[in-house]
Image 1 (cartoon, rainbow over the protein chains, first blue to last red):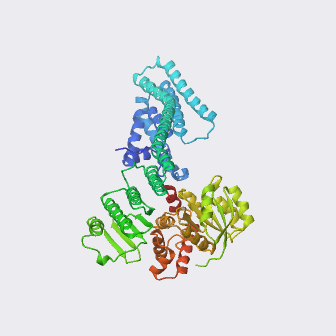
Image 2 (image 1 turned 90 degrees about the horizontal axis):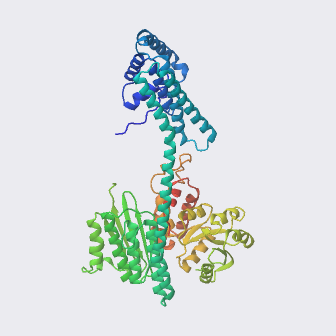
Image 3 (image 1 turned 45 degrees about the horizontal axis):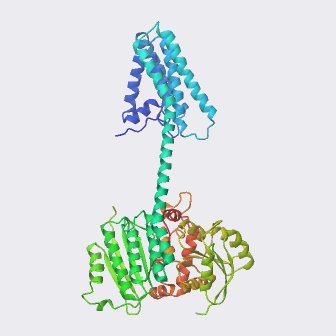
Length: 383
Length: 219
């Protein structure tokens, strides 16, 4: 599980909103966190104050209106005075590190905080002048170096091992923060380069595909004497190219209803020399139900191509969340659905039966001389 | 049917296509001018003042809307019929929303095209099965997803049951006459429904329209 990023609370802040922010981040009670924080401040003395200040600088503020100072000044001041008194009474003489350690640590912390803010905001502020950015990083660096130097000059007198470790860690972290953004930028550049290479590869693949399909077909068409055959070649190529361009399908495999219908349409056009006008505003991934729908629609197109004697078959396919439907219509010679031979498997088995097995229905509307329309409707369960 | 003679300007950048079109338009349509670019088309339409402009939705120097925009207000009598083979739905949508009275694909038969020209010249609207399917799809679902800043107008942003029915039949390949017969209405009533849908298509704030157009391809 990933904890949400720590942000300084806006609504219930007392000083910087650090405690409330941490409490929210950890899902703990604000009062508990504040008590713990106060205890740490009392025990560690000045170091705790620096840490609190650093957190105040490091944690980004939560968006939203901040409680105005006038509303919280009384409790905050009371709290701070009480805390100061307690620190003075108990902790100060006991654990507070000497001033010689406190000052360098404070400098180092402020330096790190400045650099860190710069890093955090670099991504958001694109058009900011570069000099301001450099100035800030420079100031952060100066603070870091100053802290380190003043620490070193004092440390031979007051070499506390723990203070030395803290200072070293702080310097290391500061350096990391300065180098970090450069590394991030380098990674972004590498990513960009990779994207460009992928694009080049894609382009090469497109060129290869066009050569193998479209250019070959164009060459064939130029040599083709029979206009009907040339037309059918062109149409088939067009569908194949569309399928590949817009639905990412290689020929022969359909991933969506539109792909399956386009394939069926091309086959019917080729076999029966009839034009099929496919209208499909919406599409869906080819699951079991839609595959059955596509197969039934194909059969309806085949029937129309074989029996209707029409020049054109109109097919419209719609996919909604709750229902998918295909209408196959021709204005050919039509027939009387009540008088279809029982052995005409196409209609009874491949269309009506198939749709019923898939949980849908098929309706055939036709009359001699008035064309035929097959309506295929498949209810869908929201997935 | 007896049609009056209509003056037509063809705007398409493919000369061979223009020639083929001209040859198939028959005696009731007189082609008074041809243009291949937006730059040529605008002065030509102003000069000839045709009844109908057959307009490719994508030209070398701009979309079909670039031809309509400068002429539409000053020549309200000039009707535009968008004509395309496989342009992006964005272009088709932009052309229609800037004032075209209809959209047909180039696979339309000459006979159907002549009928469409006369229908558009009479001020009615013409939807290809594809456009009808497109509009049905774009207008389905609740209009709640329109742009937050835009006001939802229930009258403009949804189709009536009858309009839905008519569009679905157009998408299914029915002619106006067949639709009229099937719904027991007059052809005039069907034309009124389609014109009303065209108006909604031109004025609606539904942002499904543009999203739809951006995602899908029109044949």
